[in-house]
Image (cartoon, rainbow, N blue to C red; front, side, top):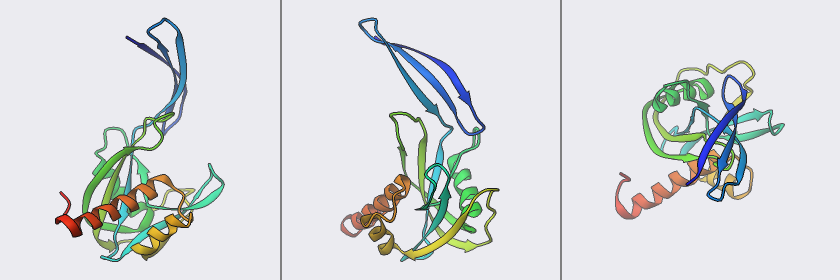
Length: 182
């Protein structure tokens, strides 16, 4: 039986870092640094049956503009669907008539406990973007098939975007064989 203790190393407005110490069954100690995150959402905005709204988003951490699905961090105790509605408008200017949950996944569980909630947004109406200070974002509406091709060529490198597009593609192909996804 392992016992686990943690010590906070850093706290920011979006996450904290803890050193987690496990006492292994043989008594040895194992130390890891873990990023604790409140969770996030990512949204696959389907402008129509054939087009998806991606964003070009400058990411200071990699000093590059990435092509991504819109996404955002949950506020404390905020339901993921509320975050999805807010972030979709904030980053793309689109308001969803319908948000459908598709999946939940961890981005990098070796160092991070962030759980990502994936939604598909349909029945979109453009109401104008409300971007945060420092966000350098530009909409990129492309045919869905082009978004898939952008993954294959490496133009899209963002993990949540790859997961979202390929999972939705899988659901679409599955629905052709077995009816609508449940």
